[in-house]
Length: 490
Ligand code: NAD
Image 1 (tube, rainbow, N blue to C red):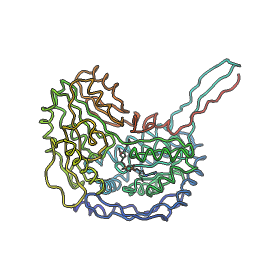
Image 2: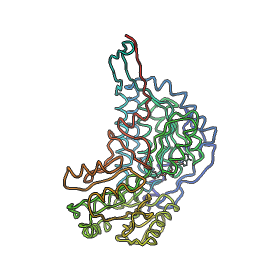
Image 3: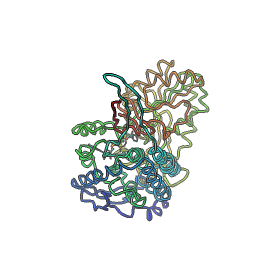
Image 4: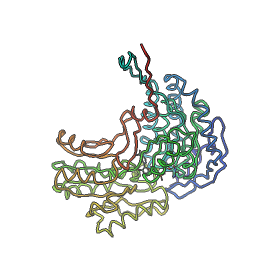
């Protein structure tokens, strides 16, 4: 683990201060330690915002809003591209921050957590800032002749609250679209992974965004609660668990502020009859185990047709041989640690609970785990009823479940038999049947035969307990825009 210690020296953000308006504010709230989950070392001690600092951050965003909203889309686009340039230049400092605080393997993080976030998603938002969304409705003659336009205007101040697993992506998904739309932002990261976002605070200043357009505060649930129920906030955009999402909805309701909720999932990967499982089993297993299974769209519920079930298990064994659990800085590693020991215990608890429910470990990694770090060996669980906790609840770790089915209609019924509806994959050789099944599955994104990408121009979000509203693409932009009908008599 020496690599971690070496890189640690020069990446911790130069300031641990909050960014409120144009001031680097010293935190006045509670302090806590941020850990490296792979080594259990303390990376930094950070201080959270006090209640008056939350007020100050919202006030700074409110003050900055009229001028930022009044800029042309082309001007906002320039600012966002400049910000993307600064982030690109800082990629070699953002990467260690993410690898160290999230424990995400460097092999995955360099593209997915940094390059993709900036090159694809922030750049897309920068271009979307320029779009003229005015709709000319033309003439209407009742009761008197009129003409109408529909215009879009920024909703105001956005509270952006993110989960721990993809700190830069989740922040960019929110502030990219919000700033492009003309809103101003108060960004609050997870208290477990706040360092990348604090570092962003430094980079915002370097990029020359006008003061107050984007503010960065840190804190725990109390700060999140104050921010999401703040009367100065017009919209809350949240990524995290469904339990906290429900609280946020209630908190925002006090001011009738709108919410965008990007929540968890229990996403199915459906292997229909006739599919060559030798070709896909390894890809499927490596996909759900990505980032140690700590991905909202992890396809960790494998629904496999009876006729290929045994063959699928045999073919998947080599994926488990390819799973390397350990030091995120080792390029060979593809499974990092769980974020904290309580989460590690929760994930292990799902495995123990599944055995109690009559389930079995069908495939697993059995190599000894590193002595330090909150690691869990990947497991595929089977022989469980569909009502079992491990089949129904989001585990958010390297544990998947496999469930056989007899025919396609049963596969669709099982796929939809959860409270969630974030994503799904359909494996099928017949494109017409694949499309039919994709339309029957209740999920915000359905991939056919793999791929699994989040396009910056396509919507992402969930049905049911997976969320409210959408991020990304024009659908993500609309979350931050009010719609106004302007009608004039002719
Ligand atoms: P979490 O819900 O525990 O915490 C998320 C954030 O909410 C943190 O910043 C936390 O401080 C804050 N918070 C806690 N209580 C609050 C309250 N009462 N009011 C306001 N804020 C409060 O989530 P997590 O463990 O950090 O992230 C994992 C979860 O996020 C998983 O369920 C995962 O599926 C989900 N997720 C969803 C997406 C998506 O796009 N759908 C993406 C990534 C993660």
